Length: 182
Image (cartoon, rainbow, N blue to C red):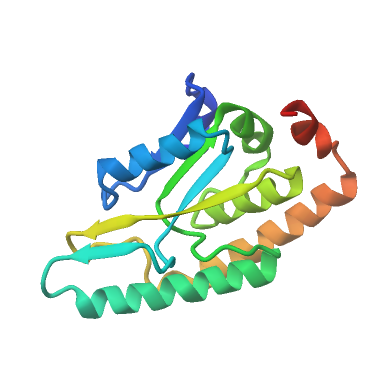
């Protein structure tokens, strides 16, 4: 649904956020501002020292566990996919229309790996990704991530890695994007 929405949107910039709305509107504005400064892809990162996590009382233990899970998943994604991002799964990302047209037709993952596959596509296309420190506000312990889903998430990463190795061997013209923007 996110991939389809990004492809069908009409604006110069396409921004999406998680359904729990943990990122305040000013963070969406901050992503939009970076996109207007000729950034093609902007991703939120909760792992940056400048990021601020706000939560109501009683969520500390839950957020500590969630932070560990997020760090472990990002570490695995970076290791398996050759990425270098502090927070691959932050639920706030923005794209220029041209980056969406370049990468989204190649994105097949429909689960947690969607973000990682998008980032690996950026790498293959030579599209720089800007990591933005954010303010995130957690209101509850509802989450789509659970320890039980770890196996499926890992399997998605291996599938993404195998698919993008095949794509790289087939050798589409990766420089099209880089050339077209200069």
